[in-house]
Length: 328
Image 1 (tube, rainbow, N blue to C red):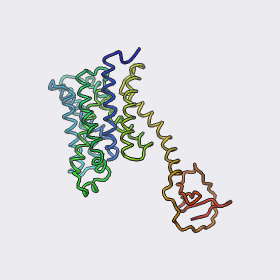
Image 2 (cartoon, rainbow, N blue to C red):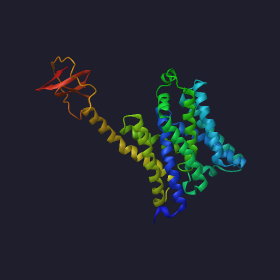
Image 3 (cartoon, one colour):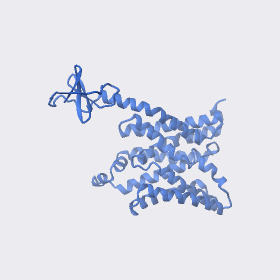
Image 4 (cartoon, rainbow, N blue to C red):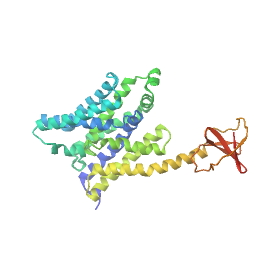
């Protein structure tokens, strides 16, 4: 039984692919700004947007996009103008958004059960129109996240330095927040508002275990997110389980696999590429008693020094000399 013989699964796969790429692309900047839970905050205020759609008879996706963008901008204003930290601003939006959504849904004559498909995703019911909406919005997010990567990274890394360099910091921070809001609403039908933050953050955390530079990290995160999204949809089809949960669990499994591999890669990288050559440094050997036995697996940083390797330990560089260590 092929998954591609069903039109609804083809639509689900297409929506998942674009969501899986767009979410980590934006999530990379959120993680860099230490706002990893921003997706959760925006997701909760988007619940209010869904409720407004049900109340007014408009498309819940459309109203969720508008309200989510408003919430993202509000987070930045509270954080900047109100001098509140990012986590406090997120907490305010977090609680107010979910409470407002439940209340508005009740005013619309519905119950909390009506929000279930938006909270946890309902990718198998995605219509052709939904797919085009997801593809269009996700495409814009990916284009902005990749096309403005140097500016966005500079702002996320150090706002003061970016401002001194002439970058319009406020404009780029708002751009990041709006991209996050759009991504949350795009992922609403795939992984759900309560799980979208995981798809924005977990692939980034996995990529950081394996990659060194920012460019490699963002593209690797997008690849991992794509694999998790497609794998989750396929798993949900054959195992008859919720697709949103499958996507997130596969992403978490990727992190569990990447974590020990990343540690091994970093350890080998330290040994192969020491931080200094040491060839031009003065060499004053001082014999010392040293009970620790250095090796490739000891965890101390290795420094190439001429024809041998020194190990940085206790603030000094130690090198094996016969049956003892010399202090350099």
